[in-house]
Image 1 (cartoon, rainbow, N blue to C red):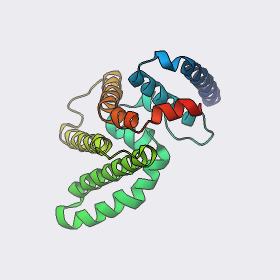
Image 2 (image 1 turned 180 degrees about the vertical axis):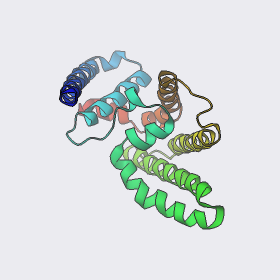
Image 3 (image 1 turned 60 degrees about the vertical axis):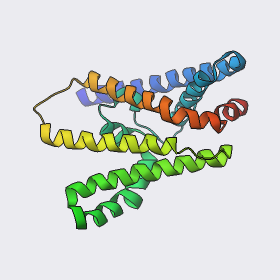
Length: 207
């Protein structure tokens, strides 16, 4: 009985999550009617939420509550953000790099090399997308965004390994810190290239 009640509650929460996201997506799309009065950077942020919400409402899961449940970067990138992309990068980039690097630096260090390789490939991929859409000379800011996150991801792994259970950070603090770090670095390194590529303008007109 308890398991049935928990399943029903879980389904109820999922349904309401979809309803709330649908409403938010509708509000964002309606906001585009006033795009001439909205600062371009704010419009870019809104468009980012637009894409995220649209993908979340797809029947095939792309994310796993990254904004609500992430506790650390490992959790955010490894289990919650763009699940499909992670599942592709793991066998094609991470594992081959891990196996190759392990021969020279050992398996533990090889894992970190594999992580940096996966983030690096992801960064180059996004820079190519921006170049294709905007035909602007790449500044590689997006690549730096992913490399920065890859580096911090590795630091997090090392710290957890040596600190372990000695220091416990409350879940709500680590969650806010993780999402805050993603947003700040995203605005800093991701927003400018997207503005130069005209993604916001094109996306608003398409909406």
